[in-house]
Length: 606
Image 1 (cartoon, rainbow, N blue to C red):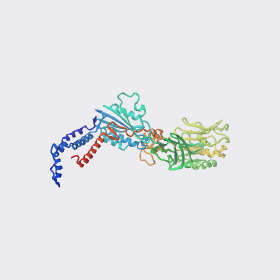
Image 2: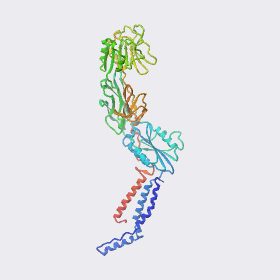
Image 3: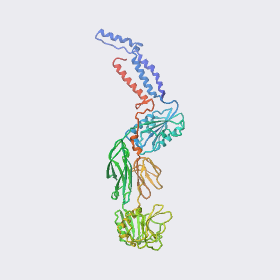
Image 4: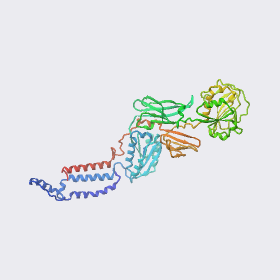
């Protein structure tokens, strides 16, 4: 046995004082009795009041000495399995999302506090948090109060991940420590075999002990939420939701789809145990005229693990696109642009054109006219549509035959060219080096419609024919082509990919991201940022603002059936049933004090 505070045994010098006080002769007291018959009972007690006569009733002295010894041992803090000499311990506390379920994290903190109480002159303890990436909660310390304070404000992350990196760091910290070493892992399920005893570990590797907390729980989760433009209506969105039932029995799961706090869809299905099922829903273009585009899929019934009951994604909101048309007068083109309610159209004649005007518009349309100094190298920052005349085009018009349209082109959604006839077309010039070229419509004489993208992301659409050079403006497909082209050129902020909680986001040059989720935040970061809370994070750069959605989205975290916490695992033989041995000793001393009080009042002790 070892003792945390052996100096407490110096108090044993008080034992003779306790015996002396017990043997002290009490003061004589005057007794009045109504009869001499009762006086005999008083005389029977007289021998016990003499110095050695008090030893005839030794039970009282024994109880007093036993109470003192129990208190003395409690102060010395015995530990049967505490090794002699110096010892170093690293506590790895699981901070992954699933520790939020039920009382799992509460029990884990209690176990960590109990383990950190062993810190002292001969044992130093460090605490690491594991939430995908290692987190140093407290360096090596021999002060149990400091260790307990470092645990006071801890909360689990909303993300998942593996413990391996943190366990590796813990073993590295212990590798250079003198004396015995111990690795204590507090989690909700057993470690994989390769994590508990890594291959190639040295013979003097630290002893690994696992404390399991929590218990198996039934849970339902939304594992995934994604969106994509609807091919038949690119201004609308198709939403995909994956729902899972991690329960021992089938259950009806109801979930709702919310856009900016408004419910736009509600579905319910019965899922078998362990089943994962995909659902889809349509968000019409009218609904995307919202304030922020925050789309959430949420379970309507709560459970003991709420962090995975909601998944999020951001829909780029469709605001009216400012478009500038430079034209001498073209009712077909003007009518097609005005037919799209999401377009805010301004019209100027060629003589009113100024290059500085383009900065106020997302798209500029040149109708069979070009500024004299305009080239593909000095285009405005806006998207540009050249109808009929293209910078650098010098060839002669050629007849059009063997028309071919690319159905995958975003310019041609729901656009049919099979009955379109062209008088002729001017060959389009080659694009600058490094530009991406995508022909949307081609003929035997060359491309008729080209979509071009510069390395900087600038977009251009060029047609080899003027509006009046075909019967295309008379077709119902013409307004659709114009609408598709304008929205592709406008190319607002694209929906950023969803991230899992616990991932690190690396802002690009000139980009910053909020450090906390939500619409209100005071701090921004331009350096790699750990996103360990679910929610929407705002991302900004010099030109636009968008939102990054962060979800738990991890089946391993949501499946709580694998939890195997024992709830009463012993840290050592000196600690059991939630109490350490010194606490039991103090409790025994308090019990004996009550017993002594009861016996004294029953006249059985003195």
